[in-house]
Each structure stands twice: as structure tokens, then as C-alpha cells.
Length: 269
Ligand SMILES: Nc1ncnc2c1ncn2[C@@H]1O[C@H](COP(=O)(O)OP(=O)(O)OP(=O)(O)O)[C@@H](O)[C@H]1O
Image 1 (cartoon, rainbow, N blue to C red):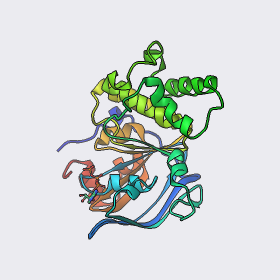
Image 2 (cartoon, helix red, strand yellow; image 1 turned 180 degrees about the vertical axis):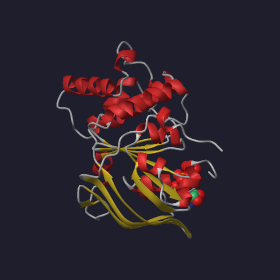
Image 3 (cartoon, rainbow, N blue to C red; image 1 turned 180 degrees about the horizontal axis):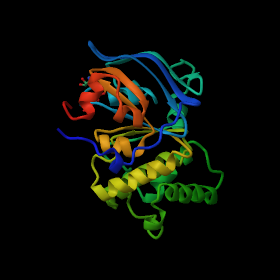
Image 4 (cartoon, protein in one colour; image 1 turned 60 degrees about the vertical axis):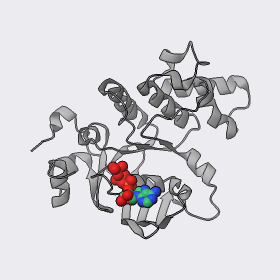
């Protein structure tokens, strides 16, 4: 039976949910007749990484997409319950979804740069949100975002080259720079390393660790080693239910539910 080498994986120390950034209560999601998520309640702390783990189809991505209302784009999808960002109901009718998605950015499984230059990939969001008053200011935002995404040194001499011409790992860092450029508060990452090789994965994991100082990060991952390495809190989903959540160290060493125990020890998944 595969065991996780927690020492090798460098389990992060526990952090208490001091001030939750995102609070979800009794969230249910249906796709047409299919009841995909059942009564999910969770507090997601700021300046920390929260990992969602669980077997394929358990609802991790569905719940992640609730946090910036990406599920609104799926016609059959119905979300009930309450999700708050800094105490504000994000499903309130008066809420501007475009503004919400600027505050809650997303990085997808497959790097998806726009078919534009490296510069334009990063400049696009700040431009449409009116975050720069001048070209110089926009240049500064682009440079700062690329630096924070740990990509600037590699691309500074070819900002006009197409973003799609970068390696997979560089493209994913470009997508992270694009997400950061609009100064989000929360970054949602849906299996951000699944298309990357181990070296590119290590770069992204380091980056996630650095970014947590300034952002609230939620990551969906199939890799328990990755969850152990990058997160301070872990939530385990199974068959559309949030079975167990808590400090990562606790979930991986002394889980309370047998389903969590079975999953982390590789008995199913
Ligand atoms: N657009 C959709 N329309 C209908 N059903 C969907 C849709 N998206 C997801 N589902 C269903 O909802 C359930 C949860 O799917 P979801 O993608 O959230 O799981 P997941 O845990 O992220 O899976 P994976 O790890 O394989 O990505 C699954 O049964 C899935 O088939």
C-alpha cells in the first residue's frame, strides 16, 4: 500500500483559521438532475494555502468554481447556500460578477495564455479594469506581475513574443502573472501542475508558497504529496460531500474519518 512520506513531503505547520477570507455554508450544487455537491460548509483562511483533495468526480472543481461563480457559465448548474467573501454574499443579485472575478482569480489545469504577446497577456486585465492611468504605469504592473510570478528574468528581452511560444511551465507562470496583474485577493488553482513536468511543478509549488504571503490560495490537486508540500489546510471531498477538513498536518497524520484515512493511504482513489 503506498504510504506518504510526510517528512520528505515537508508537511507545513498548522495554522488556525484566524480570519476567514471565504466562508461557505450549506452549499449544494446540481447539474440538471445530478446532485453534485451536498451541504458543503468551510472557512478558508487568508494568507494561507487550502488544498482540496479527493477521488475523481467527488466535486472538488465544482466547489472551487462556486467561489468565483464560474459555474454561472454552465447552463444546467444551480448553486444554493451561501458563500461570503470578506462577509459579503457573492451570490447577491446586486454583485458585479466581473468585479468578483477580478477579486477572485483563477488558474486552470492546462496553461491557457491568450494568443497574444507575453506583455499583452498580462496587460489585458489591468487595462480592461482601468488599473493603469498611463503606459508607464501599465508597464510597471506588467513587470511587477511577471516578477511576482517568477518569470520576468526569463522573458524580459522578449515581451513582444507570443505567450504561446513559452514552455508549459513558463506558460503556467504567465497565467499566474495574468491572474496577479489585477490584484486579486484570492487565487483559485485547479490542478495547476497536472500538465507540467516535475521541474516546472517544483517551480510552481515554490511560487505558491511565496504567493501565500499576499493572497488567499485554494488549490485542487490529485497529488497528496503536493497538498502536503504546499498547503496549510486540507479539505477532503468524497462523493460530493466535504468529509473532513483541518490543518494539513492533522489530515495527513491523524484523520478522523475512515474515508479520509483510506484515501490518503491509497486504498481508493
Ligand atoms: N458541466 C457539468 N455538467 C454535468 N455534470 C457535471 C459537470 N461538471 C461536473 N459534473 C459532475 O459533477 C461531479 C463532480 O465533478 P467535478 O469535476 O467537480 O469533480 P472533481 O472532484 O473535480 O473531479 P476530477 O478530480 O476528476 O477533476 C461529477 O459527477 C461530474 O461528472
